[in-house]
Image (cartoon, rainbow, N blue to C red; front, side, top):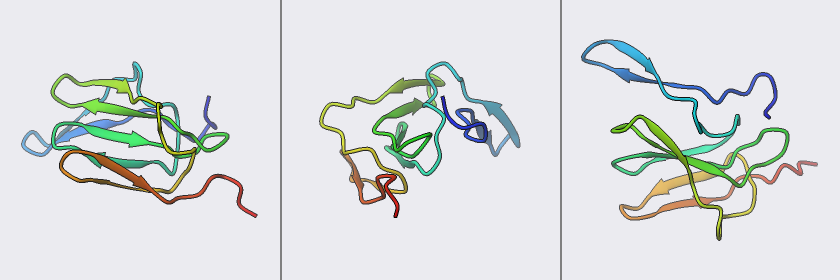
Length: 103
């Protein structure tokens, strides 16, 4: 698993009720830091980041069902942290970052 300070928990905020509700931890993304996130208009995708090494995995959070599911790793970019992600309207593009081999 991740380092002790890395979390795989979160919460969603309701500004009307001014309250927080925890997101589920069942298949929440592996504990990580330095990941990227992109909003698709319906879901939040997180990808990459670092744990004990750079990661090439991610998750998709669906607020409508309050569920997480893993993203495919088929054809995914190499493991990296601190990348940039952007939603184009039909795809999430992940670019740049570092691979954990800082010198």
